[in-house]
Image 1 (cartoon, rainbow, N blue to C red):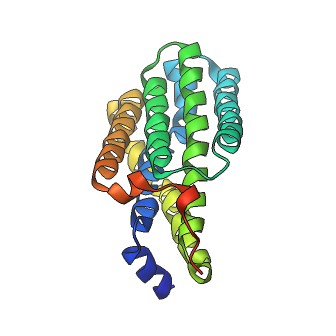
Image 2 (image 1 turned 180 degrees about the vertical axis):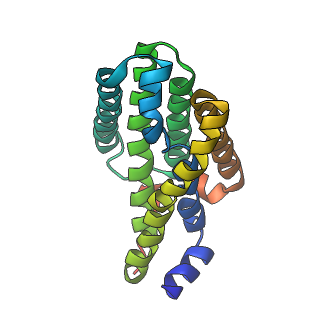
Length: 203
């Protein structure tokens, strides 16, 4: 594990790919636990509407997976990682501020599609960049960053949403994630230039 941590800290581009998923884990993915509140209090659509909203996310995810498979068979790029996360955060922003169900469903579908594009591309790039002997260790760090922080995000966001409202909370989270993406994109020239087709997997 120490070898994996040393490699993840020192390798080009890999630190950005490992640290960036912490932002949506803490700030974006908590929308899942807040959907019932949107269904009941914001949109007034109850349990049937909640099912409709979760279906919109699923349809978007399926569409995103097919799009990535067809449009980016080579594995994508660093620019796609950044743009997909910005797009998913924009979908979350639209959903959080929308008082109209059709627009909310569009925002959730965009969110689902872009999330799949982001995670699939990041996963692919990491496996191409990391040497085989360290791949399992580095991918475990990626899973920790992308999913292990989600419960902490829920723990933090819950009281904030209770105090200032779920719409304001989710909109703020989306905007912060977009800002983080812009900063990472501007500062990490290697990530912007990274293309899966040009990566030679280390031995």
